[in-house]
Length: 350
Image (cartoon, rainbow, N blue to C red):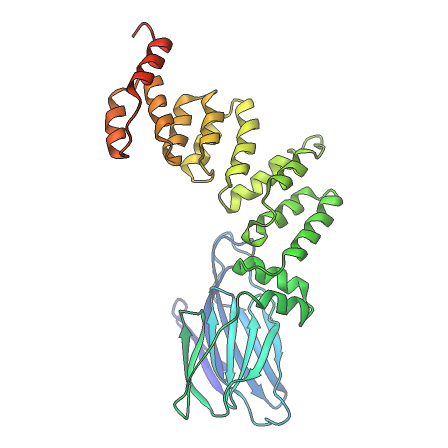
């Protein structure tokens, strides 16, 4: 097998010994953007190999993707088998490789580890393509059969944990694909790091755990009860900082972050996070902010769609002309008598 890798930017080509190859954008943990990954496989007299490399210069702020080389197993009953097709799933970070004798191999891009291998066809699969509906691979064999292979999202993480006995890989796949099945592993690691006082690392585990399984009021309470170290941010603020880097805070998190920020008079931070969509707006958050800043509370009520509180804020901030317009827009009928009494009580001069 022979192929050429051509660089458009550099206008050069490189001959490569290989039978099947694929390009895929892949985002490594901690990187800001995707890496351009090139995977190719070959079988020669020394055996089968899969090579996974990054092509081109890494994007600014990205770490280099370390080259991975993995052995490709070919069963003794298939001495002349070799790779004939390869497709990669950018959604799952996996490589699907098919051989002439109809075997499929599934590899993890980040580690280069083989996750699964099986025979899916007794005839040669001569053409393949990505199957976008399942983020897998689709192919046609010589008999005209159309074959599709994809991962079972509900079972791949438990399979890696129990069958492959690779909890580290299970955690990485679970985080990368936001898949359930590794809850116990995440809880165990979080508790271990927390117990060792590695609050920042524990916060990263809680932030990356799929389906938000560790992002609970109980976790917030544990960070609140941790002693602060001199010259360092409190464990609670470390936790929230890590969450803010990667996602939107949920309702409970937004409330608990707002309390100390408001006490410090740093309302501009809340305004910044609101604009960036980092906080989950709720009536409770608006009520908490309103005691310090009615205009900022108005922004929260608007985003949370709390019409009665929006109209009260309009009145208290003397934006009377907006009340009727807003009420019509959201099909809400205010209690104008109650509203007028409140305004007169709080603003007699006007």
